[in-house]
Amino acid sequence: MNESLERCLSAMRGEGLPELAIRTFSLHLERLQGGESGKLSGHEIDAVADLPDATALSRYHETGVTALDQVALIKVNGGLGTSMGLERAKSLLPVRDGLNFLDLIARQVLALRRTSRSAVPILFMNSFRTDDDTLNALSPYPDLATDGLPLGFLQHKVPKILFKGHLPAHDAANPEFDWCPPGHGDVYTALVTSGLLDNLLEKGINYVFISNADNLGAVFDAEILGYMVENDIDFLMEAADRTDADRKGGYLCRLKNGRLALRESAQCPSDEHVEFQNIELYRYFNTNTIWVHLPSLKRLLDETQGVLPLSTIVNHKTLDPRDAGSAPVIHLETAMGSAISLFPKAAAIRVPRQRFSPVKTTNDLLGVRSDAFELTGDFQVRMHPSRFEPPAIELDPKYYKTIDDFDRRFPDGAPSLRRCSSLKIDGDVLFESGVTIIGDVTIRSSSPSSRIAANTEIDSDVTLD
Image (cartoon, rainbow, N blue to C red; front, side, top):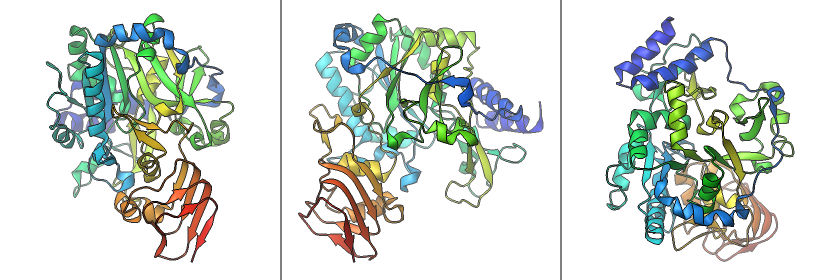
């Protein structure tokens, strides 16, 4: 064993990480040291031409309802929202009517249980940075936990690797910077090490529906479950049509052996970025919402001695994420969607854009806080029925990137965006109440004190002094 690998594994054992997590990390570090870049060339894949449409599955509804007692919901909830200046779980961020992501998820699940009369379990995969805050925030929902199952289970952590030499990184002043999450592909390992995989199977749970906590469109759908059951699918990915806004994101493809695969931007060779962004060729992106047949997952884990050979994603970062001048490091990560290439009966399905409403930036947050979306009686946040896709929003990052700066410039809430196609703000602009944006609008300002007066309607570009 070489020095860097030995020191990394020693650090993990010192933190009490389970042996399976250590062996999984070892696989990816050994790949890196063996010269694997984690790249997937366009020469190794084919495009996916067509997918079954989720809006045409009504005949599977009854089967899905019948199988509801066999389903658990898992929300991936490890993100801190550092891109928006947050230092706590992003899921604590208020979204609609004073409710945060966790409030909405909890109320959605309780509403599903009432209408279906089924005690569908909900589990949150938290990171070591979000676990305490998440469980505290869920305490007002004592009925949410299911007997014999925890509300949360922990995603593992892995060492950040120095770019030079691949030794474990260390910041004496901030030792928390030494560690990073290993990507949401860790969900499979964490289900095993937590004991939840066996626990769920013992309780007769044969399917899990996994989605990101910040994707407000990812809600349980009985028709999709029924489609999976009747077609004996062991892994099902929800994919949506790529648009111009999705050019740089990962997409669904097919390997030369015929199996479906996921290609992320970090896996694209530097000379293939133009092809990677071809949305006419590579038509579907992964919404990071998946359905997994647990008995099939158990068999696959048994065959691989617990270590799923997911694609290695090599992400280049800095040791202190807030300091671009700090030591260059590597995060070794995996994506849960990449497991699609490992399951023999995997499939993908085309879902409408309504099932993909993530909040990654304040651009996204402005959209979901506006009337381009609506909060339903069962606490789902959906695009308004008059819309087919969310408005394209581009806020000047100098003034709107962090949540504090964002909230100061929208003190009375979001403007009306229901009839807005796109909104770009260049400069520092404060919005008073009742502003309406229509069509494609760009607002430019060179003044630090510009504002849009209350009840103003804007349907063309505006330049403010």
